[in-house]
Image (cartoon, rainbow, N blue to C red; front, side, top):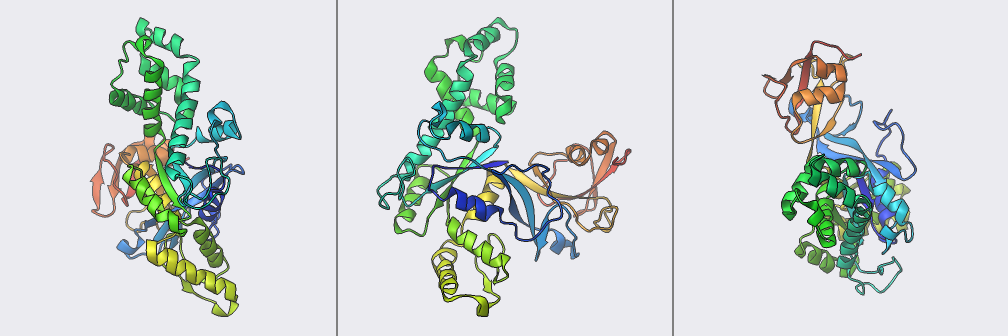
Amino acid sequence: MVGIVGKPNTGKSTFFSAATLAPVEIASYPFTTIKPNRGIGYLRAPCVCKEFNVKDSPKNSICVDGIRLVPVELIDCAGLVPGAWQGRGLGNQFLDEIRKADALIHIVDAAGATDSEGKICKPGSHDPAEDVKFLETEITMWLTQILKKDWPKMARTAEAGAEDLVSLLETRLSGLAIRRNHIIEALKKTNLNAEKPTLWKDDDIIRFLNVLRSISKPMLIAANKIDIPTAEENAERLKELGYTVIPCCAEAELALRRAAEKSLIDYKPGDCNFAIMKPEELTETQGKALKVIQERILQKFGSSGVQEAINMAFFKLLNMIVVYPVEDLEHLSDHNGRVLPDAYLVPYGTTARQLAYIIHTELGEGFIHAMEAHDKKRIGENYVLKDRDVVSIVSAKKRG
């Protein structure tokens, strides 16, 4: 899942509202319990229905004009202020929420119209780069605070040979969505001696955790309020500093989604334009607002940036792909005859057998082989799935 983070007054709540406003009703979501600070957003991907020239009947997602909208879980984290790792503001709540996130979308006031605490100030008077650096520092210091409580004992245990440092760190940080491969990569990048952790100084621990943070919770910046004159220059400067930056106007996206919900316009999340469907029902104010959005946002930047940020978080930061499991390869359907019913979001590197386990444990246990629909070829358990693969799994066991 992806966390939506940022200081107060950056447009974080607007971004979250725009991202989670369902374009159409879905019978059931893939998440059974959604807390108030969680919501369902959608990844936008081309559906394979056009390639196979079939009319699909999605079950766990939506297909609109050949565009598959795959539901994903987003966490709207509490607004962050300096000192959050020490419990200042809603710091404890923020950090409790962020521990569940695999990646972060940082909503930044690119216009520099709010200070470090989120108070309104003159556009251009605050440097957004400071907000990015402070958020990184807050998360790193939060991790440091967690780890240093047990560090002396862990370091001694590792040096005594009772258990290696990677395993000790994996156990200690497992509740923070930090995995073994993240720890190994951070150790390699920092070149710290995992055999002699008692020699690590405080600065070494902080440096290690700073790298671990960037690996385990990769972040992109949604440069919000991009329509304010000072924002474009700031967004470019953030790019020059090496950050992944998406120009964004969350207010515009929310307005478009609400207008589409009322069938006033034809608009899908991430579109570069819209069509007015009921001009007679638009007020003069609404008409002018839509024209401004079209000219100053969509035509200039190609989109509002909200959908692009969500897509990039899952597809680029987390390296996910979309695959389509079916039971009947000839008709591309499930046992109820629904065509291309499911779109599964899985990490790149997932094998055919791992997909079988994701669908149902018994399918994985009884895996014999699978068939891929594009090439109509037989694939084995170690076949690494590609984006847009349509796969039928042959198993000795049926789903219970």
